[in-house]
Length: 166
Image (tube, rainbow, N blue to C red; front, side, top):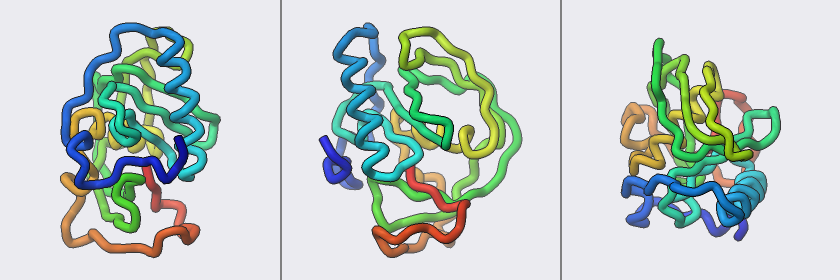
């Protein structure tokens, strides 16, 4: 599986609620490694199971501290709000301003199979919200301010740090 295997907008799997993961086994460990590779090859900050055609509640992320995974993530607390520019690996070439909570608390299971509870703010909080939305069949364009949606050249490096694809 490679970056060009990412499911794109229009595929029904992106609009379905993903299934819970019941068992942390070798298949899940292999899936996590595959998702790390696809995310890195795509130069994304996050990737959810449905984005690679797997309707499971799993996402991976890397905001500069190395890749990590979350299974069955849930936001248990949130506060604050800010707008930020987002893009999506499943909708290449489109970006817009999306309101997100500035701080979130997320629970789930990490890449080692351990239950975790994490507090996140800034970019990590935004990535968690974007990826958990994917697991719920929600895409960034559903929440974006429609007046800010714009096309951007595909394959060019972003000049501004605030623009991200998840």
